Length: 337
Length: 98
Image (cartoon, rainbow over all chains, first blue to last red; front, side):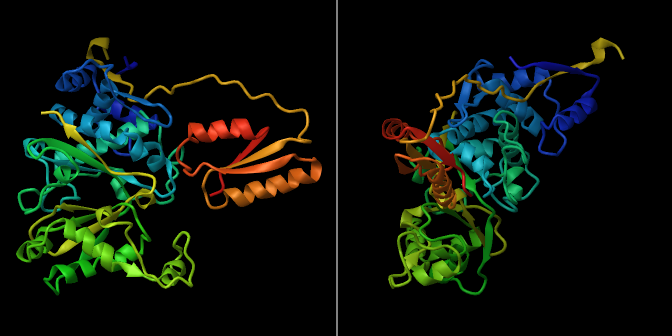
């Protein structure tokens, strides 16, 4: 069981936790014994149940530690099942949680929630999807960051050596906009059942927002993403594209399948070996005498396509991932019903 | 303020797992020893290790070198990499050359 601390009141707890480096810099909700017990009970497990073990350092994330940090983040008890699935996902070895959390490259844990749980918790998948205002989105993402800070001991300036990092390191959790999408949701593409809920985690770097208001063919829309991809490649094993509803409508009208998005970008985000080298990102094993153009993506399947955002505006995003996917892969885990 | 009005809050931090590990026995000399140069995959690790090897080679009659790259800076070396180091070299120098 975790140590307890006696304080006069909530404000004293808030100050104490900040002084001890137990926060993300913002005030926390004091994790009282009663609240923590309520959050553990929401999972229906004992407090010492292990939800995940970080593979490199062996840090153990118990239900109680997850609950303490979830209370601090401002979660409700019913959010715990999403957080538990996300902990399962980030502690899967292929995700490389230690590396992504301490690296100068400054990745954050992006969480994408699918299935009935998203609406049950009132999550936002629409207007300002990556912005503030939704309690579940904001606090689930924040709980993951507090777990990384407190349970893994990965604090900025200590183990976390991000050169600049990005705002997603405070919180970064959304629901996919399944209602507006003609395509299968991302958790189904990644092997989870269509009638279940799931969370997908990716080690996201700072996103690029891409606008295309002047053309409505899928090809011209995707062409607008090619320059940002040139800032990331070559041969990325993994990246995410977040298509907004207005862009998506044109893909629907043109009868495009989801897989064609990655296929098109793989085939068209091409530049010469010389140009990649000039941009400071040489293609491994290739020299400038090689005239075969090289894609920003390693394969058509390298692009994880999701749908999110509000109805107005033609603004989509590219989200590169840590090491561009070479040493961290996205992971999808089911959320218990 | 009375004790009854106080609140009890819980420590959010995890306790580190501490494993005691002994140091490998140090050789009396590097003369005749095969030196493993274990790079962590970062860009400058190998040049740094080569430079260290050259300095040592001026001071000792080294028995040769084996260059190893663990291929992933953010994860421990794989067991098979450690096994090959144990069988192929007498001493190891490692470097994190970012």
